[in-house]
Image 1 (cartoon, rainbow, N blue to C red):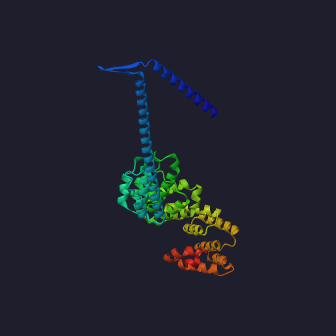
Image 2 (image 1 turned 90 degrees about the vertical axis):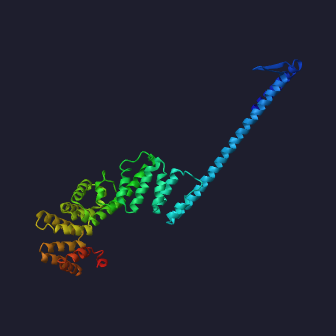
Image 3 (image 1 turned 60 degrees about the vertical axis):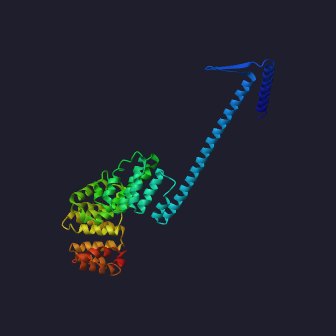
Length: 402
């Protein structure tokens, strides 16, 4: 700091000396300056000319400083105005999110009608699309979709597909989903691809519940997680009567490709029921049920397997497998009432009533015998058998079922 001050003082001293020398020389010989331009002639002293140049220089510097200050003030004003606009947007966005949390999307959308913004940013348009879809305002939805920039169309299609699915319009939603699946649009950044793919999968899961059989025609078939797959299989069960033969064949081909996956094992019970509805799928259902029951006892799956087994009383292979499975159960679960009742019912279906009676009569109480008697009585009444047989075999739900 001291060195800089010394250098500045030295330079100032040099300037003063140079100015003094120059003034002394002017006093001895003022000289003159002659300016000729297009027939005009101007002559003045050297001192006056220098003073004029100095004055013009100072004036130019002052003008530059003035314009620089003016530009800076304008920039600061625009920046302050931009901050105010951003704060206003954030405040209204906060209000909109609060309304959304209160399940009031129409009011949330109203808070996003920013009068001071003629061309809202893409993200704001997306929010307007989202809230318009939540409020089921189709006119507003189409208006906001039309105003989206090109790079936001992929997310806009996703939002519109979600709205169409909520409006029970799966056919139209599928057309939009086909534009963003299986290939993620290039407009979606790498950082957002994982979240985007997850959102697309959730929409396919909703489509699968509305159109479970049509999902099989989507190639490649969207991957669903355990909960989504279970919901899809439940929808398939509910719409088994609507399945076409080619759709059933496609389902069995899909089953053959996934029956070794870990995720599939969580849905084994539902798969058994789905396959059991199809004549061509019953052998697969029986095999799957036996494989799962050897690993772990499931009362509902045991009942499904039992109903499938008694459909093949003439096949010695099925009889041997059933005998082996019951031996496995009796060794692993010796005091399981559901296993004892299932085995007794199996004997009864094979016209071995005496052996069935011995199994249930050996039980400490008469409950198993009473249930077996009920099963025998309802076996000739299809409606009662359909509604009560599964409940009677399940000791955990029999009271609520009856």
